Length: 365
Image (spheres, rainbow, N blue to C red):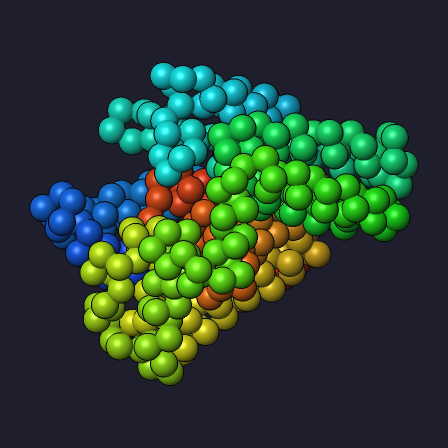
């Protein structure tokens, strides 16, 4: 490591800012449910602090591991991720929550293998694209092998099923492949196939069609599939410019289901208003800008693609989550990075930005 270089403290400040907002809002949005379900209004807060603490320790640990190390172990990391994705599908090992068999129990906690796969695939793909960039313009030698890898992972995630995480993984990898130099004509063909594939996925599971219908007209089934989005909009609307005040949400009183998770941005809008929501979006914008700057200034192609993959993953996930909450796209069921309550999701996110911060040490910023 270059002793004259330091991590990007501006980027670190943005990450810590998002994390602090998340801790405060997890408590504010969850204490009603915590008191009702566990007779302890601090239940979710204590666990979130535990996850955040472990994640921050991991972030600083990863920040001082030279990012080139991950290139050496990329194959092993990907193999472990695939094994975990297969294990979670085995009855008795995988845990079912919310209709998806996406978790593996570890003591009193659980891990979500698809979260590991997102980071593992970014690391492997960055190495694959960096070492074989001369083939990326070739469909057979460059584009197709990347697609087969990405869609194999996507297929295993869809067997759970978890369309939201699968979408984040695919979109992130497509950004990396495009920036690595793939031909636009290949993406046009892929887009056409993607439309047919998406239609097939929706048609194969009636609940996905119900979500589309609920998105187009949530009032058609206000107590069923349209319930979440209606309650989310009921939260955001009264927030106005300044919000109802921190802790003063009404929708968290058993209207919006488990508001500390996927719909935490709705509580932010209700309690902190348009200004609070804008500040959160601005923080994600600063994270994206600084992450891209780190990527552009990285000393080698592997570092550039790895940084780009990490920041793209966070930006895509945040964009999808916020779009769902404000009613722009159908419900997908993914968390808001740094802010939503979660164990493996938050910890892996902080591990990812630890790698990004290490790349910033070597970048000329």
